[in-house]
Image (cartoon, rainbow, N blue to C red):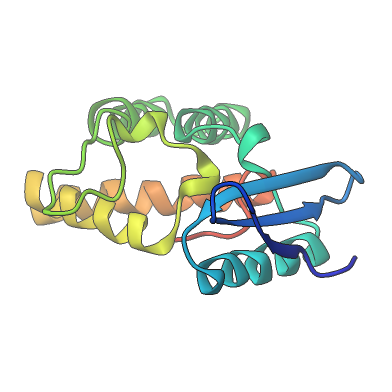
Length: 165
């Protein structure tokens, strides 16, 4: 696979990244203000496509989907009912309805509605910060451990390129 192409949009003056995914489908990411930003995204996409883990924004699921996959795996493994109930509480009470109240929010709206392709390490750090702010240290650690397990499962199902947490 060739490196994604970076070019300038003559009408808008912004930069465009064009690339083909593993299924030979063309994608365009528009609206980069600087060539540096476009080149950085092109390098990131090129590496993910070569590894076979790239998921385009248009086909990416949301955090809710990853949580559903993780909870279903817990049921399939026939974990204790109380363990599954705790996992469901972590997801339904703490992760999905979470909002970022930081000075510069890393995501808009509820965390459960965030696209998995937008889930980056700074977003994961913001999740940890919000959990620590809202919950006791013990509970925040447990919920964040569940979040990391959710991302591990999502990476196993190629819903995300890597575990950002």
